[in-house]
Length: 127
Image (cartoon, rainbow, N blue to C red; front, side, top):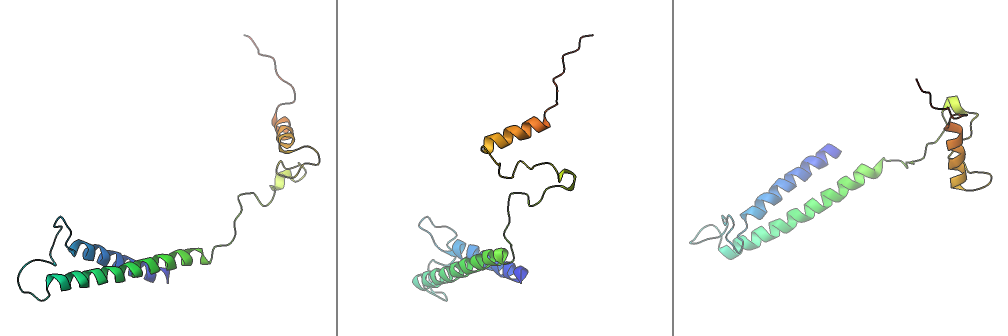
């Protein structure tokens, strides 16, 4: 489903780029649609057709973009940045993410640092 919508979206994008490039701008642009002498449509009729086509393609681009964004989030479940469980090797050790019994977050972090630090500082050895 998503790949079909992406292909339609890309076709709309290519058509929208082509229609915008065909339009005659103030500076001339490509100007393929406008110009002199009798043809299949007058300059004004071509401008109206290109303007309406651009509007139609822009609406299609907007709708496919919205549908693709909705489709991308449809099956996504809630996620969390916090780990859900403790590793099996540290079941007995208190987790630094658990709520402390006394103190605040800084006390919890200090206790976690003390547990990771070596038990006794070693004196520098000279050779």
